[in-house]
Image (cartoon, rainbow, N blue to C red):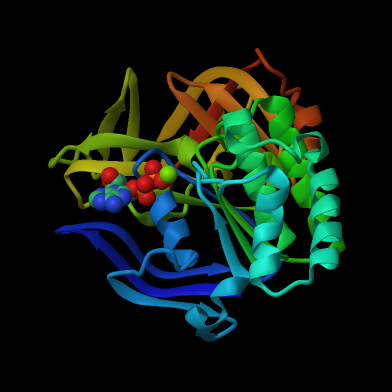
Amino acid sequence: MLELRGIRHRYGERVVLELDTFTVPGDAQLAIVGPNGSGKSTLLRILALVERPTEGEVLLDGRPAQARRRDITMVEQQPILLQGTVRDNLGYGLRARGVGARDAAGLVESVASRLGLVPLLERRRHELSDGEIQRVAVARALAISPAVLLLDEPASAADRGAAQTLYHALAEERRHRPFAVCLASHQLEDAYRWTDDIRALADGRVSPVTPENLFRVDIPARAEAGLKHVAIGRLTIALLSERSGPAIIGIAPSDILVSRERLPSSARNALPGRIVRLTQQRSGAIQVTADVGVELVAVVSPEAVGELGLAPGAETVFTFKASAVRTF
Ligand code: ADP
Ligand code: MG
């Protein structure tokens, strides 16, 4: 298990990451999601020991990770390939670790075939597309069998097909040999489809809410009858908060009740809208995305989809309490 403790990272005066704890279990299939600038790459670079945190420590299986830095590999968003062919690049880490030439050649062939890179083996970096470079970099990382593989936006330069190949290959690898994969992505679809543990970052902190339901708002100083109201576009949401001024609010998808019609209830927020899409999560639960003025996401069981007749285009009401709206 890779673990961060008491991390605070600053660039100049600015704190860009603040995490009391952050753990990547040994067999994790984890995604870090969040908007641009939320700290995803910084978090990965600290986990990968590429960047030293201003404060705090990085532990691998309970000991300072530094001693086992070769077990942790990161693929940067814009990886740099070395001179030479793709074959040379895939073998480089193996040779650096003292693997003999014959064994290394065999390992290179096998990782290349698993990632669909055999036709590219003799090419040089200027003969590759950005997506192919990313795939070679992932293969290069996999070739050395790391205990923890950190991927920064691994499919950002890939088309859909190449992204599928990449994620399938990762899943296949993990079937042969368990290891931790932690990827940073702003593509939520990838995160939901290919990982089973999603951590959302907002302004350098882990948020308990997935990023779809995070909004920047201005909280008024005055409450009316104990409630405050904030505007998100043309939508108004009631919440309970002592705070005022600019803030991020979040509604956990599991705190939203999904129905077809308005229900008699004490909940202060009942938002009518239309279902945009249904997505199955790896856990089996169904994510319901509705346009209620903005897009909001709720989760329901597969049974509820049939019982309520939930389908894209159907009218729906999303209901949640003012106390379910969290502020950050
Ligand atoms: P993300 O990957 O989620 O887009 P980053 O981790 O790249 O976010 O950046 C987090 C914050 O830290 C941003 O505000 C960014 O501008 C800032 N930042 C990142 N790298 C540096 C750096 N080398 N120097 C100064 N600020 C940086
Ligand atoms: Mg980034």
